[in-house]
Image 1: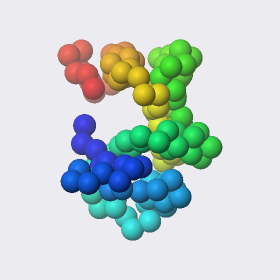
Image 2: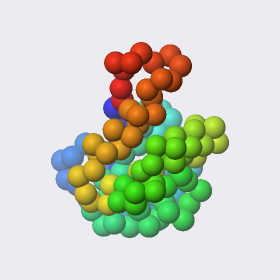
Image 3: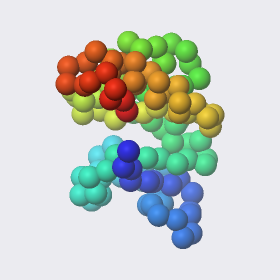
Length: 124
């Protein structure tokens, strides 16, 4: 997955764009300056301050918390993804600082099984 990284802490020598929480709405939600549009990659936020997750919970986004079992249910993830595509909302999957990416990947792959256009061997 190609991503455009945004860091919420100054990262010297790292690839990405450093932003403050105050700049996050302009950069991530409204894409002022068209950085996301021009780059063509999906945004990835690496937040060492835990402030971005608080911010996106209160924005117009589809927010899923990997620690909450209800948020990781197959149907809930499917609806959040479809809603994001249909209405142009950000889909935020908060890993809560835990190594839970494999759970998100498994749930996404469960949703693709039997989908139109995907063979049985194709996964995320």
